[in-house]
Image (cartoon, rainbow, N blue to C red; front, side, top):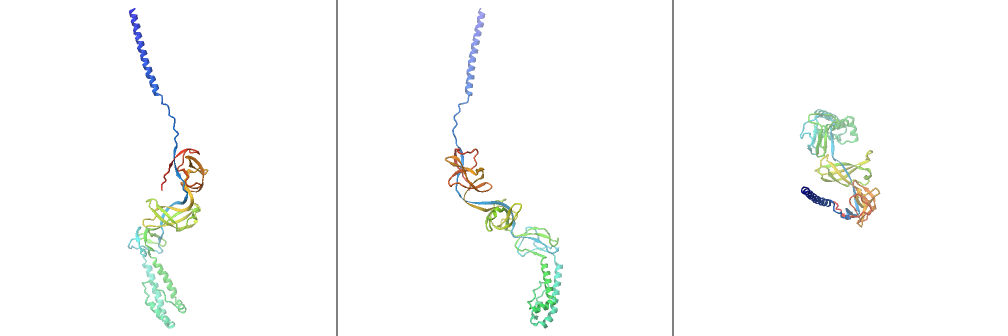
Length: 381
């Protein structure tokens, strides 16, 4: 009996310990479950969306047409040979980048053979005049001294002087001796002789050279290109609808694409022809500045249209019904406006009053009656 009682007592204690452990575990599990529950949510506050706004201030607006082109020298010539011969070596050499003064020799073509022919023709004319002097002394003694002095001034190495002034009877006499026809034939040869020496028509720079000293030059061959630096033209193509609002003499703001430097030009010419493919008209802008170079890529902003009592807004603010949102009592209201002109980014409109407030940037999810908090928009000047 004692053994049985002992086992029963042990069993009782084991059950008591197990029960105590289960109670403790239950308390711990319950505590963790309670801790894991989320805290009660606070009621969301009714926050207003901040929106940038600006005030309407109607006034004049000048529409500028952005366009671009390449600078070309206003004064430029293509140097073309009119005679044949070997190009001679002179100083300075015929090289690109070489500067010349007005009247300075650009290139010289060997002309000894042709010059000898001209001298021979001068000698022939000299002999013709000499042969008629005795007849002039007999028939027209009043002009004999005049023709005698003409022969004294005659130099076979120099250009032929003009014939003396003649009365009609003397002209008929010397013409019958072939003097006048010989004189003008000689004038033609002397003019051709000047083509063997090419001179600069103005001070400038040789920008291209297609021939070198010692090469054979043929008539019609292009020898190079000569320009006057510092004076340029910019050709831009503008829509024909704007041309009536542009006139010669109008100032144009220019900007170099590479250096971002700004210059001022003047509309010098407007073409009368419309390009049939692009429906554009060529407008030429003249600009003078020693810092400019031919071939520079320039951007021009031409004042084409002017409007009064208008306001410029971003094109994205307008919807398809030509309406935009204005702010009244911190609420959005759609307002009908009248677009006058569109640029790449702006819409020029009428229909708003001075002092009215409108949103400055497109607002996603905007609707009539939406409450907002306005924030003044700082525009960059």
